[in-house]
Figure 1 (tube, chains in turn brown, red):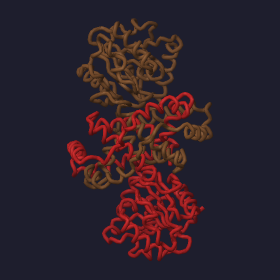
Figure 2 (cartoon, chains in turn green, purple):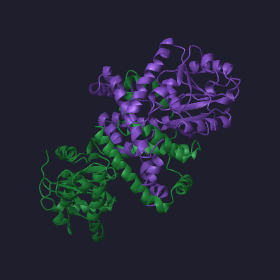
Figure 3 (cartoon, rainbow over the protein chains, first blue to last red):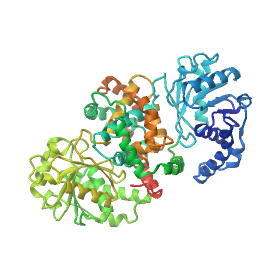
Length: 313
Length: 313
């Protein structure tokens, strides 16, 4: 099991700030840093508001104690003092990830592990030249990490398996759900699954089979209900009398027959513009921020619902 | 708006019985028929148990009154007396659908509409020779329809648009969420979206990228949380500062890069066998029925949660 030394949060936008809550909620001292003084200034006020929401949803009981565990630091070196784990969540470009990894590589003590929140760029693209590259890996959350528990652990070819093991244990300990990939693949698992579904959804919309809102409804009032507490394999395992093998025997021909040939290409400009018009008629751009806050409040209540139903995370 | 005449349920296995609850719950007299006397005998006891579960979840208040609206009939002709709508849910083969459609075609009164619960076979394959084929269409629910509200409406080329309009209004009236397809397509929308996600999940499993349980977790503790109350388009609309157009500009290249070439073929036998071993180690085949009951109880509570959060259906 990983120790109880403090955790460093490096890059403290929305993702990094969510991570600060995850670790502080689990009892860790959290040392947060962001290169931007403006961003640093927003960490604690945002955490206070978010903790009040978590308390209201019944997910935490001691918001003040949790908030008191988070400290904000003006330099990277100071944020790293005494930590055993660094969660890095800087802007997602190879340049930014490479730069921060080099800095961390030069500053981290022995045995410190660095997890990057990268959602698509694998660690092999930005840690190759690090002296301690065996202690870097991808630790990819869904936003916001304090409300959506899944975390993808993706090792680079040179990541020490013990580092993956350690992060996996730590994620379980703080209440997240670690998913372990055996090796790097574009988009990891989560965004590959999201990607194929989006590609098909765009194609159906382009062909005029159904409206944007109706395609959304097939998920939000259909498939998404089961998928909020069981994955696609368990879903089909329960959907045939004899389980997954029986389901496959009955239906794999149907699914094979739906495969598009050639596969869907990039989403076309004209289709995107039409979809954007449809969405903006439904939700003007100035209301996006409000709707995101609405979503996060629903996610908090859903997390509480799952917790009390024994379905968590 | 459709009238309040009784509704006929033809084919009363799990799907048809669920439909009986949907209509009875909304105040309709429901006339149920199944060619099998054994199946007919199970309709009311099953409905009684299911209504008790709905009451416990806070979704209904008067189980006895709802149950009293369902009557079971020994002949198709008797079940059709006075009805304005028929929900057909017989076994899903072209032969069975053709036979029941011919029978219904000969018996239904003027203006009666027939919706088939078919999950994949389009109506054009089994209603072409019906005299009243303009009043037949696909009305595809997710199982169980009294807990999962989405319904796909799929017209055959000869279906009267007024029939689609009428069923859409009726589905809204009884608390379902109708999704309208403009024309037939293999798998409709819902199973096409499920299919591409399953095809990718099987491919990732076959390649050894992650375990079955871990692939499931990326949905059940990740993507499925949002998707239980918003569809894939609304999800990406909220996931970039400027909305869906901004998201597409940032990420369509990433998703295009994940497209498999050639596309996934049918799920291979050996991979299915390995997945089945993994599932059966987790859940022995004799426990499948219990786990389905567990799933439906969770779906009932999720439906109640969504209702009280104003997220319904």
